[in-house]
Image (cartoon, rainbow, N blue to C red; front, side, top):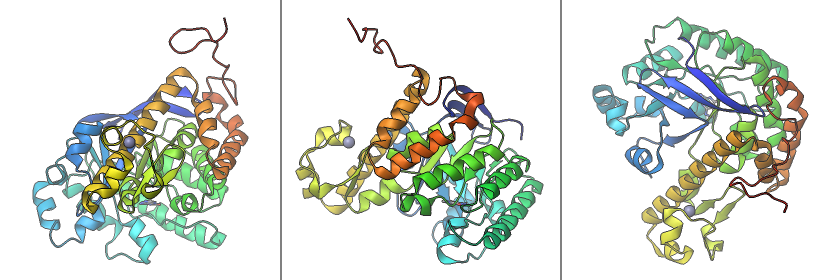
Length: 381
Ligand code: GUN
Ligand code: ZN
């Protein structure tokens, strides 16, 4: 496919861009959040995501649909857009995550790619192997070779105007990640997710995450659209954007809501511990924490998921505005103060700053401090 990604402006390695998704007939503004939709269990429906949150893109799992007794036939007949009732871009994952969790899946990369095409996916994913952190070099190399074979096979398939993801693996070996990035860039595929980072994020290994993403970025071409697979806590969006990631997906908003966890841009709070909501979204303006606690489980879960989404989309708007203003690194630094592990990630980002020379539009590590507030009032008299 011809180039589908255009960068409008940089701050650090973060950028505002536009991803053209031809099969959906839409252009998605980046950085973008892709809420994960579980087709069986829609805490917030795709139609609501579109109308209430302005979602232009979402992600769902084709392997779940492929193996579903009640949804496989409907999705084959109606297509994904009608089944989910969503007119934006729909990305489908392939079952790789299930492969990593359960050790095997009963479909080949070719079969699941065909299925994704048949159900009308806009951006499909081959079955890559999400090699976990810290495995032996032999394992990382041999699984990467399998992933690369599958990307090559995917590039041979006629996928029409559907875009195809080329996941970048390589475990915690920066040289393998860089090589994987370079290989993916030459594959002829379209979008470049950095994979198998969920275990790192779960263990708060943000410095390792930064090293892995930087390495993948060195291999990829500067103009490649990059997706950080499974990054869903708004606390880390600014850091990830400053590294040059354009797309994020996560089920965190829904999974957290299920057990009464309330996201902020700095922390995760338990509903039980909140006397006040530190947020002015529609949910937090209309309810107190005590009121939310008194609701039945489903209703509480839905409202918490909505709040979690409001915070996530709000943080993306904050990030986009910071890029416009040239103050992204100040935002990253502020977010890094929320957790010692985030601070490690921020320091690792600064260590890599020289590699982003070509796209800094400010002097690293910070731009000049603003001498005026945004609305024009001077800071000093
Ligand atoms: N979701 C989270 N991590 C991954 C990954 O490494 N590969 C794929 N295909 N999906 C993911
Ligand atoms: Zn809120």
